[in-house]
Length: 250
Image (cartoon, rainbow, N blue to C red; front, side, top):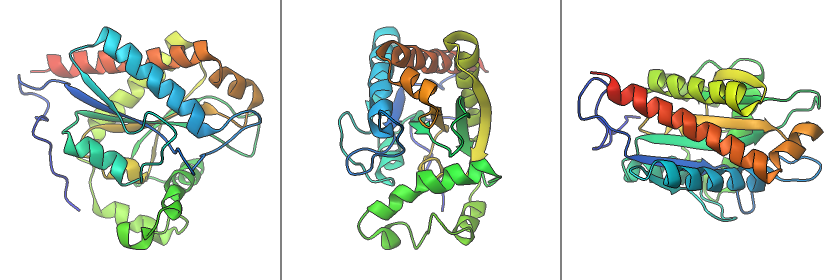
């Protein structure tokens, strides 16, 4: 698979490079609820955060066009989410999710970048997030027989180098820094995994797990409207700082 570099994207180092378009992807939706806790579903929590992020972006960065892959309880196919970003020649792709694990004591945010380094929990996240494929019709044809539950299927990810790895890590680090230093959340750091939604995007891309719905305290925080705005504002500030750093490079 080859990436088509968008017309608006130019390699870092040129004076013309600007962040002009950003696609925000609220994970799951519709018949796919994602993970769930005692009082909420992932699809609802992340949509509220994504909508808040779009509002904050529009208010503070009006020169940047912000597009959501869904603005309601719809179910965009997994392949259509990065495809939308590619088609509008977006400069950043940010997918927002909420985590779950069988151990309810674990909590905190973590931001993923695309990589073939699937280790321990990272591989569990990849399997879960990629399993949405199984809800789609004709998924074997659409995803070329990729089986999100099969370790062998992940070999295909090793065939593609992510041309935007360094920029993705840079953005992910800024997001986790904001969560830790400004939003007051526990940061579990930047991680790597083979996530289809990132693999198919032709621009710097990250997947943000804003917290664990399996932890009751954190689930309540993630469902609080004020905390949702704080989280959205943290992501916005990370985008702002990334934009400033990238555009100042000569």
